[in-house]
Length: 119
Image 1 (tube, rainbow, N blue to C red):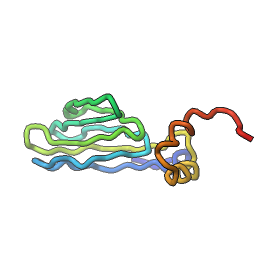
Image 2: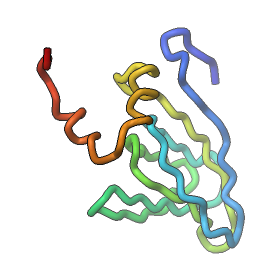
Image 3: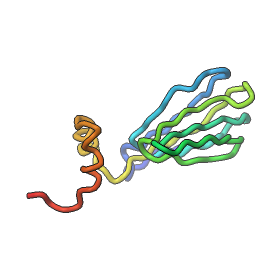
């Protein structure tokens, strides 16, 4: 898993799903690419407002989770499992993401919809 100068904010790690755990809620501002490299299936639950999904990632399966989609990882059949996770930033510069983090969530939709100069 090599790093790239073209993607300096790329993050990758192994996520271990413990048997019997309730699965912590994860909401990342990055695009997430998941790959089940282990030998046990893992359940993925996502929630993006009005749409909820649940699927099982069998060994060798992969999935994509969009930025700011709430997700949880649970064991399947009580055996735990491991996922390789790669997080990649989108088109927003890190400074813009930092500035948005201090803004009230009620204003995010307006910021996303703006497409013209206001001054």
